[in-house]
Amino acid sequence: MLQGFVWLLAFQFAGEVLSRLFALPIPGNVIGMALLLVALALGLVKEAAIREAAELLLRYLALFFVPAGVGVMLYFDLIGREWLPIVVGTLVSTFVVMAVTGWVEQWLGAKK
Amino acid sequence: MNGLLTSPLFGVSLTLVVFYLAQGLYQRTRFILFNPVFVSIFSIIGFLLLTRIDYAAYARGGDLILFLLGPSVVALALPLWQRRQQILERKLPIMAGVAAGALASIVSAAGTAWLLGASPKVVLSLVAKSVTTPIAIGITEKIGGIVPLTAALVVLTGCLGAICGPEFCRLIGIRTPTSMGLAVGTASHGIGTARMLEEDRLAGAVAGLAIGLNGLVTALLVPFLWLLFGLD
Image (cartoon, rainbow over all chains, first blue to last red):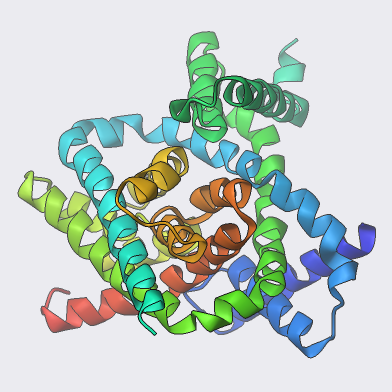
C-alpha cells in the first residue's frame, strides 16, 4: 500500500513539474495520470504495485470533491446577481454535452 | 472551544461524518437527488451558515481532504490500464465524442446564457464549466471571465452529472458503458467520474479518460474559436 502511495505522489509530482516547467494549460495531476499510464504500458511500474493504493483512493473519489463544493458558498452572491442565465445555461449545457458526446460515441462505435 | 474550530480536526471530522451519513441515506433510499456529494456539500454549507462558522475555519480541515484529490486523479490511470483493450477498440468514437461534446459545451453554455441576457463577463465564465477545475480556471483567466464564478459552476455541473447523468443517458438511449462513461465524464469531469466508477468499471475508466481529453480539447478549442470569430 505504502509503495503505491509513493508511486502516485511521485507521478503527481512529476506531472506538476512538467506542467509548471512548460507552462502547460493541463494540471499536474492529469499529466501524472498520463505518465503513470505510459509507465504501466512500458512495464516501468507494475500494476500490482499501485493497485491497493489506487483502489482505496478511487473508492472514496466522491468524498474528495466535497470540500471544493463547500467553497461554492463564498460565491453565492456572484451567482445570485444573474442567477437565471447562469443556472439555466449550466443545466441546458450539461444535458446537451451528455447527449452529443454519448450519441456520437455510440453511433460511431456501432457502425463497423 | 475556539481553538478546536481553528484546528484541521474540525473540517476533517465534519466532512467525514456528513459524508458517511449522506452515503447511508443514499444506500437506503437510492433516491437520485440524495447523491452523497451533493447532500454533503449542501448540508455542510447549511451547517456553517447556521452556526456562523467561517469558511476559512472549515477549510483548514477541508483542504487536507482536498489534497487527496491530486493522487486520486493520478490513480485514474489504473482502471484505464485495466480496460485498455476495450478502450483502444473504440479510440476513434471516443475521440470524436469528446471533440463533439467539447464544442457543444462551449456553444450551448455561452449561447443559452447570452440568449437569457447574461452580461458578457458571465457568458465567458460559463464557457469552461464542464472542464476539470484547474483547466477551467486557466481558460476563464485567458478569455477574461470571472474565475470564482467558473470554479463554482464547475462544481455545480459536476454534481448535476453525478446526480442524474446515468439516468439521463439511459432515458435518451445512450446505453453502452463507453458511451455513457464518456458522456458523463465529458460533461461532469471528476464528480461525474466518481459516480460512473460506482456504476461500472469500464464506464468509470472512460469517464476518467474524458476528464483529461475534454480538458485538452477545450483548452485548444477556445483560443481557436476566439481567433475564428475575432473576439479577443
